[in-house]
Length: 272
Length: 114
Ligand SMILES: Nc1ncnc2c1ncn2[C@@H]1O[C@H](COP(=O)(O)OP(=O)(O)O)[C@@H](O)[C@H]1O
Ligand SMILES: [Mg+2]
Image (cartoon, rainbow over all chains, first blue to last red; front, side):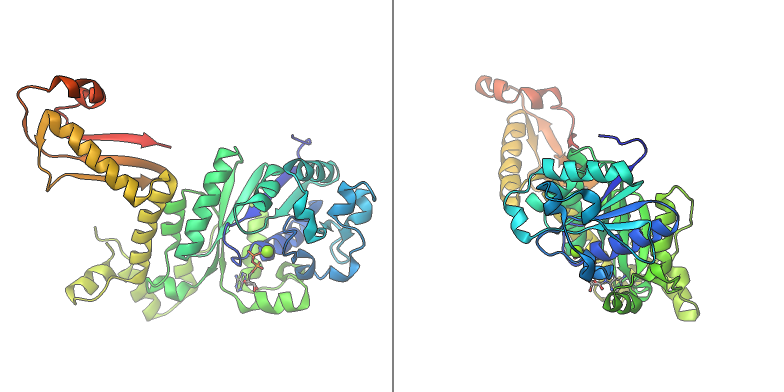
């Protein structure tokens, strides 16, 4: 199902509320800013939110539903971002779509999008049921996002198992809401713990960052206005890595300075 | 074990919560990945011990059958210290225990599942 060089990437997590939609919105903008023609597809038909995070909720006329029903053309349903014209959103239709939507429908939509975009990001719903299966049907690659918490990591593991059986690859990991201080005190799973357990390459680390909330309030993703906040930088770096650039990962231990930080680092030394 | 865990241990404190989290996750994921619940695992353990003890006398106290996981590969690991081989194998048991027979003198064996 390759459309010459165009990529389709599923953004999924298993658990809800770990940051899929926020990542999709920020990557969408960041990739567009790098000159990639980018489409973001809201595949979370039950609880759609991507429109809101991108600040496009008032400009929706048609949705994926009308495109599938052939009552409108794809370009009529796509909502182009005003400041970042390389980015377009294909909004989720009515939640009742879930009653009849099939994996083949998603494949059709994504194949259509890939004809005119370099990269298609699919914002996956939580869970591992039909919504996930529909969204996954159309993806060639996946980004699994998780937080350093036992429940999120466990759910991510389930999802990775399902992605593996579908032959989706590469599957890469984004670790979200990292708190360097808690990690230093070993009150939060270490980055290596999570990557070892899930056995995935790390695509990026996003720190816990209040600016994420501020930006969602405004409907302006952090990557839109060149914010220098830690999460903004993390999202931009992830976008660059997706495009094949080598950008070093931040080391959460180096984010903090001073004696306490040094001591914390020392205490994390593995002795046996 | 990290230096912090070691210090905690010396002071009689609980290990850091991240260490506990990692250990709990590794265990729960081994079960999730193999789709074996603890009850089934216990039943399997009993049956394995039963088959093996037809051939060799094993130390039931020391014996251990568990799931271990590394790099997304879960392995069933049986560690069964042998006290001594049994002189004769009961004929009715031979067929059922064909697999085990190959490795009867081998105290540890592993069956991997991706
Ligand atoms: N790095 C972060 N720092 C702080 N808050 C975050 C971060 N990432 C996500 N959030 C918050 O977490 C919540 C869930 O995010 P969302 O992207 O909607 O998750 P999902 O789509 O996986 O359900 C939102 O309130 C969002 O603002
Ligand atoms: Mg979401």
